[in-house]
Amino acid sequence: MTNTQCQVITSLFCTAGLLFIVSMSGCSKDRALPPGMPKLYPCTLKITQEGEPLVSAIVKLHSQGEPIAWTVSGKTDETGTVIIFTDGYFKGAPVGEYKVTVDKLESVVPPLPDVLPTNENELMKLGNKQEADTKEYRLVEPVYAEVGATTLSISVAKKKAEATFDVGSKYRELAY
Image (cartoon, rainbow, N blue to C red; front, side, top):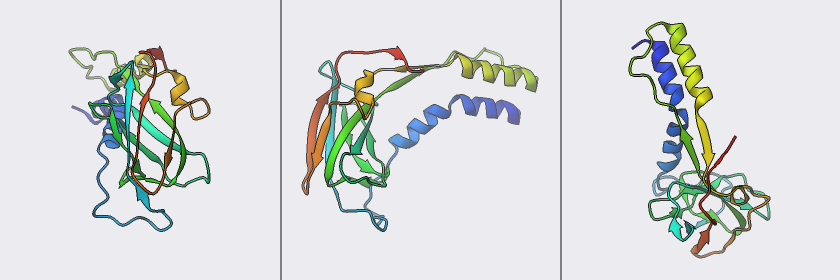
């Protein structure tokens, strides 16, 4: 396989790779908090849709008070449970009031032909066509994915924060 073929195939799976990195967030046991990061408190949420666990959704907490410099988020597991991390590495969230957004995207990538072109120009055209024909669908109603619209909120105090949220009916619309 040529370098160009590898680049095209790599670009086709870029989104999947980014989602994988988000899902592989580790624990903070072996790393000290960065300077200026406040103490973090455990925060666990359960996200459902029509009463069923919402799997692989991205959940973010957006400060409603003093702005914070860190991303506070996580990804739901097979039970719809998300353990919140700050900056993707430090388990927990700072004390505060938060709006909660929930989003889940599905990428539908057209299948590659059984035989890839050997000509680099044709291979690039195929990669461009694959990218153009890939569709992204939002699987959660936009009201829950937008910080200005979401009705979901949580208060994180100096103790463990837990909540369960249902994000409405099953939903599938083109995202872009």
